[in-house]
Image (spheres, rainbow, N blue to C red):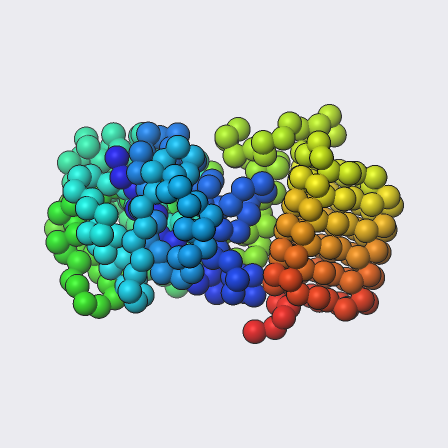
Length: 359
């Protein structure tokens, strides 16, 4: 079975990181986001994934030059221009000759949704499309999907005003589609699946939805991106999402090649070749391969990417440091600040809820 994964966005909410790296190529603990997504699809029997790419397609091709990931064949559909969700799906399906029932996934969503149940439900209902739904506390930032007693979608309400949503079940960015749906997508312009295609299907009574309380997160903001890694380390995901290194008695995941002289608390990952200097403290964080944490530094609730350096006595709280970045001694970084790849933050600097370099 084929799955089309939408990875064409520019990841603007995670800039400046995404100036250099497509969002789905950013790491969630010890592997890229797209590896988590394709691995999940592989565990449900998907044998080909079509990556619908717009921004930096070269990064994906260079990362997976053999055209395979997690035992799944990869195909690429590179949009000539931004086509929005439905337009991208139709373009990818045509480019890769998708002819049978297929899946569509938003590439920045991580979930443990049971795809087998979703496919079985879709076949049982016999509709043109089925949407996976997930409950959220505040649905005002999402597409809300009310259904009737037969699970038929009755409306598709995109980002309702706070307090007005008829349900807390939202579009989880996971769909089963029949090829006939593609006939509803006009060519030559941008087409939104949420605002055009799904409402049209709902009007004809052929759009269904299945809800699940399985793990689900949209990784698009700095806070959610960090949380996605911490959720893995706290054991909130399936075992397949855990790091490849075994968990220590302290509840940390430390690669055998890392040199740890400082203090590493539980729910922490330390990657291959990393150095954690004496007198430093790390908790609830990711320190990726070849990163260096110097003496007296303190890191909590953060992601430090490959080859980055955290200077002596620096404090990093709830933030992201890009690959190869250098955080100088005695810096204080907090509030889900985001530091771009290979940037240099001068000693003694303070960042709170900031982007560095600034946009």
